Image (cartoon, rainbow, N blue to C red; front, side):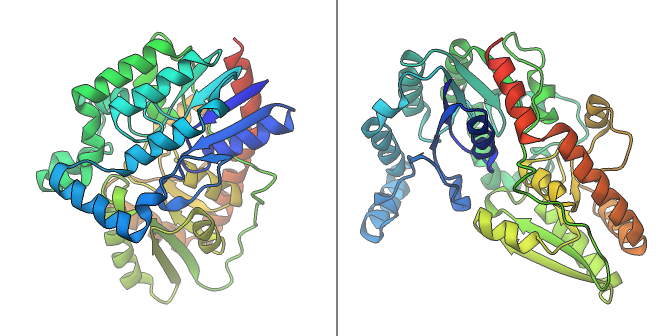
Length: 378
């Protein structure tokens, strides 16, 4: 089978590609490098010209004057140059209904070409999109990624990217994509909640994790307990990084002699992985109900992760053992949970083992790839 994986977030499609190729399928991965994360792609559509000094100055000036980013034109041109590579696939999977992040108009032109020249197109529900954000706004969830904005309107500049999805042009793009795809496949429980009642929605398929490449490392606590916190500045409030920073300050004051804290910001994916390898605990996000991709890969290594481990998530997978710490935007609760782990290091070891077992059971990239194949062919 010839498969095009179009777009990349957090190593999801790269891992799925590796598993599909092990099964003998021909897979092309194309899209953008997800910002500073710099993922490897077979065909990169990432803009380069307007990253160079003189052109970057021109781009910034025009954006200042007209609020238009010339980089999106370069992405579109890159697609046109490579368009013949995007024809004749048995299956195309879009990482998101807005996979290249150009403009809704240009994205629709690109996707019209994809729909026209390929047999079957699927949509992965992950990342911000129209359906997910409208679900959050209308829901009665105790918290979600827009909660910081709802509590403090001054944070609006930090949420402009997400709020774009509420504009008519994005709604039009969303309706166009949902009309033309064969199926919509939620990537985790957060999106399962938002999509489950849509006609084309399939059951949740967990994100794939390469458990052969990511080795489990038994945790040993001979000295200080190491806590890792990676900050993505563009998603600082959406991920709850501010909540984690406040929590770590209190824990540092309380347990300075027992812990070592490593905080990094906006680094490449490979550097990120290297830096948290020696940690025991990883702080991921505070508003989720399931784990993001970074959290899953950390769990595969055996880290104790603070992320989404909600009751709904645990019921979905019938989880009975503690495989991580459910993080909420409550500094006191996070400090309490961190304190419990620091004072009970045996719990860290037990959760570490449980986390790896969970990943092997539900996120093994070869098992997940087969589920995708079964769904695509259904």
